[in-house]
Image (tube, rainbow, N blue to C red; front, side, top):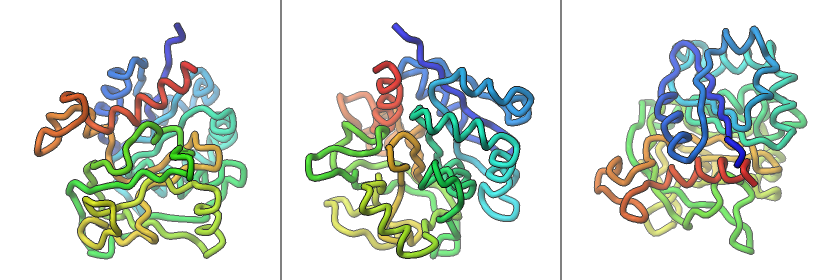
Length: 262
């Protein structure tokens, strides 16, 4: 059976890379944490991997804006091979700071265009928000998620958030219409019963309560909540999970591993 290989990109200020590594290993993959400086010396090494992870944290201290420096560095120094990786339909995920990196380099929402059309800006509250939130898994009329990372999830799940710049906004209405029409909205913040959420359950004021998006194929996924922080039920404040043992984050990582295995 194919051994799935994941690359977790790190740099100064990255955190949650160990948690992401542990989550992927739990799901049956091997996972290497690789510093950006090492990868840049052998850019094509990325093509030896099946899954790419941009983890959370505060890359380069969130100087200028969250994720902006790393986004520029990756796009300008290895954008071609990264685009090739994504266009090959291999799974890519950006979590929190990683989501900020993906949108600011332009890999989301369109891998083909590869230009920035959206961003993640300062929370409406003007402060760092850290709490558990409810998320609505967005599905089509057949009950299927376009995003391969969010398949097999129930309509409503919970995950923790921890960010200061998580407000998702788009360049113009055309981009928002594209996200809707192409079913690229993967998660929305919601209330416990699935109804529209106001602050604090929408922790940042994102347009249309958007918490995560994918590209048009569904292999590239960015979200502000942290799935790697909820792979076991015991990580939930009420010790809640599914099967009495695991958290919803495990399914997200398992989806990617199983997709690669075919």
